[in-house]
Amino acid sequence: MPLPPTSTSTPYGNESPQFSALVQQLQELDGMGYKAYKSLRGSYQFANFTLIIDRVQGDPFAKPSQCRVQVPQGLAGFLPEFYANRSRELGLRDYLARQLSEVAEQLQQRLGTGNSGLICIAKPGPEILERSAILVNDQEVEARFRVGLPAQGRRIDGRGARRLLCELIPLLVQRALHYSALSAPAL
Image (tube, rainbow, N blue to C red; front, top):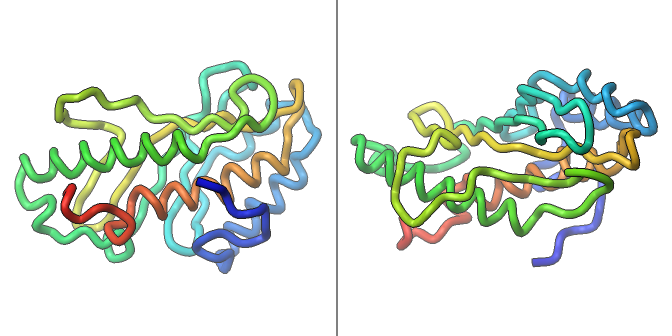
């Protein structure tokens, strides 16, 4: 599936001041030593979801950075009947983990050295299990995954990071965590 060209907007738009601040910060970090990425740790409100960077890798070859996205349930669009009891919730979480893994595989691109551009979630096996990568409740859908922050050598690739965090992650959210984008019969 071809990706849209790099632009200043996301599938959700860029109305949020925190989104604009993230874009600016990535431009300022461009070319700095990789450890400067540590300043990204924190929460960023996009127009329709929140990106939380919990742990930042210290090196492009290290274990990728831990991130979460939180999508308000009103935007995610999953009816309470999909998670009304434990077994339904388990099934929905498993299904969303599989979707997230599949879409992440489609979207990830090589964006430099080491793990640059990697988007990953633990690949689900054939059995339906409780998945800690996805949480669903009346307020939100939360997805946990890892990203390889882009580098050229051991220097920050700010443009690549912008593509990853401000374009590919919003596409991941849109394609994997919104009821309207998923196969209703599969649910």
